[in-house]
Length: 141
Image (cartoon, rainbow, N blue to C red; front, side, top):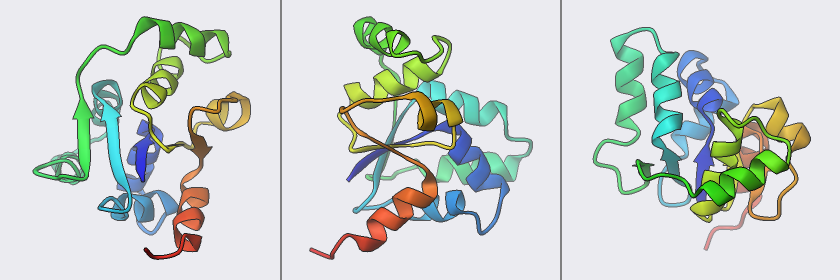
């Protein structure tokens, strides 16, 4: 399954031990491949306070075949569509558009604007806890 994780989930997962966000980060692997845009990585880094936290974040991506940061421009037409859906242009619309552009299965966020307001058929929008429940109930291949 290909997922995109919002910056707020990374931040909470790094700061709060034993949180559902931290459990989600531990699931990154063959069954939960993650792709994020560099804007998400930049937001995470802006909110971390020490080298240990920076290392924790970057280790998720370093030499990993299951985690990738994309540095390409997101198509403006997709961003505009997410703005029209009611998301803020400076962040949320970019993340929503990126998730659709990358054809992710799930966008995982704690962002109440996403969880409450966004309606799209392009991907599933889940909280970390809901995603963990989803992969726990999914039968092994």
